[in-house]
Length: 498
Image (cartoon, rainbow, N blue to C red; front, side, top):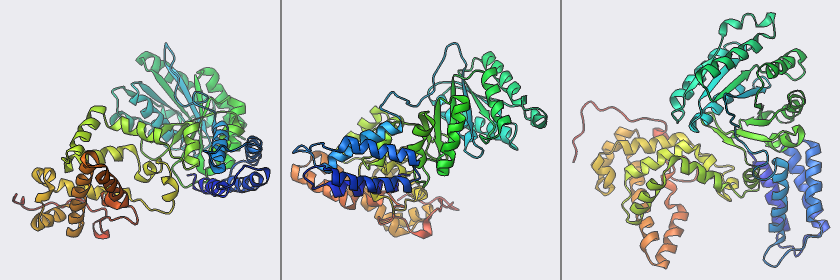
């Protein structure tokens, strides 16, 4: 979501590279461009001025060592300022949900109407369930039609789909919705009863989903304060839609003044927004960003880390987050097993299919590739169609077990059968098999060959050897439009194995 900011910073760093020294003249010129980029990204004006003044003060008069160019020096200065403005170094305002004993830990969610608060309650429940914590979702939004039913549906979804053995409970009183207009305090009583039920069941964490409201509505804001007094929360999270820009950030300031918010959760962080809310939120509200929503799936929520986000903005990637995602999906034993098979050139289609599934569970392909250093900017105008990865799975599943372990057996007749079963073209199947075998061979060379062979293998891999293994990326070989989105066909009779 930081494409504009990244481009602006990259332009500045390129202009400073080659200079012998960071002088006042070139720094002021550079900060003029940075200021424009920040304002275009919808960052709060006061935050922009403070940020530029901070960078200017740190940069002026700083000498550049022989091993570091002015551009690199400026990156370090800007990175430090970004980390500070986004929330500080690790440990200060970091994400996570506290845990109290005896429980339950009470988390109150609040925010503007349409900010994605109810969905975020479900994501937070999935986050806690994955960490072995039982959760109760309490529907205290008696204002929006079907809000209680929506949260109940989300609770069931988290219970069945989110990993972890902990239980996810639901407390809702839909019959109280009709009485809401008569007394604002009805939601307060719902929260009280939910707390008692959570205590009875021994639930670890109680999440209160309050009604969305405008900060200028004194009556509804007063209700939040009543809930806070009746069921004192251990943490209050304010949910902000990252796409709404400065309006949401300014509203968040009013919420913080009335409720003393402990943390912010930015939703729709994976959307094509300008990123101003992320940079402004901490500075304007005084509350740290705790979590970010990075997709539509129930597990698409991440703890916010200022240092990692600053790296993404500056095009430095976020390898730490990428490694963490990979570790959650692939065990160390499995990684060693695959490494040994790749070294021998024995990687099978089943192995590749397993890795493809792990990759897809980690998140959208473009989002993952954007975590690699220097890749984010290159993907700006590249369309990545994750749905075409379904075609890869369909092709592999249309193969027999023997063909998956020995793809060299796939001749013309087998390609025809596989293409019919997967809804793809014969030439696409042939190209995929050929590239798979080529990549397997190159991996073996990289692990066993001479230095010259390893260098040549790396160049071939970088020149597009893996391209066909990632269909759906413009400019790389992929499956034809005719097969896009098609699933495997059913045969009237089972094809004979050759």
